[in-house]
Length: 468
Image (cartoon, rainbow, N blue to C red; front, top):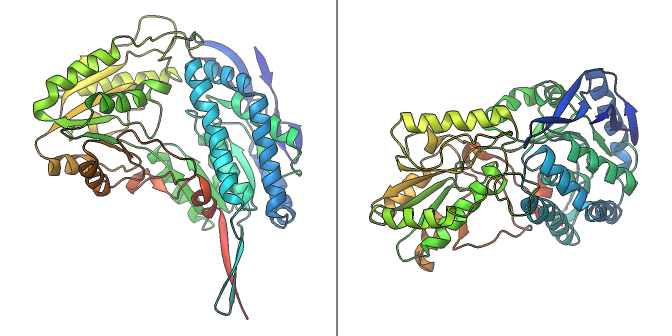
């Protein structure tokens, strides 16, 4: 077991002014694998002060130079990607295959996508007699979740730094080891001191204090909608800019005449990979009522060979939940589904072994007003909802407080028509894959702002007009 007693700020690793530590658990065997120090409020003050002191020089650094530093960070991730993936397997419980082929490559692809777009971005433009200037806000507080411990940091610091801001990152306490590797990579890249800072500690204490800090100009948060709502109050103290990527309860709409196997595979993969701990997971599968039995056959066939077990083994698809609390939350939702009259078609139980394992679960006989159809479970749980008409399918899909992602599988023209009617930020049509240059973000209570490419960059830029 390793002990991490330092924080990274002002360009170096510094002793924390705290003797309080968080345990990092290997979720597959429930063993403590590390202890990580919790930053004190004074530590946070010093990290923010370092970021504030570094801002003016970094904001005035040429965009080309800032991009070269991001390229160095990307190279550092490439050089340590096996180590990063192994760390995620241990502290998150992500399967080895998903960590290696999903988690780490996603970070690299999104960094490159943003860099490609950044080459053609203009920080100044002329409009009539005005010169329009875009520049950084100042200090950005980046509070990140545990489910994608590398990429959720990347999605914040890449655009924030390219825009000319400095950052203070507070990673989730469940998965701080990946963030520590990230800080080591940035140290190796040689960024000017104070541009990037890392303070470990709980979101409820360290993160809360950081987001309220008077010298923080922007709060960038990814996590639950409930916490996101609370950040409005924190932001109000000094009218901070908010960038929020929150929860989801996304629909996969299957239309008659489409590829049913593709629809099932597209939805099921999002609740199996990463154990369904993905905000954009397609957790509601909507199918015509008269195709329910065929849908159940396809689901049964897809799930029959899914291996649940040790995430470090190559053939494991589904590992453990990130924590005991998250496991219990998922099990509580499953029981709620049963109590409200839904039918457990597959799974539904905790797996009787060491670790926080929940069986991949599929519900049928679900109506969209049930708790399991409305609230984000964040586990390997898929609900199947039936409809009679295409109009009803659209209505059910949009009947949600969320609007982060979605999918439509069906005849091309009809699928496009339905996709245009969905009130959600991202929609895959007939298995279309997301490009890292396109915006990612949600409608309604799924957040404010967008990530990736130039769309993500814009959220971290102030705009001024100079009139001549």
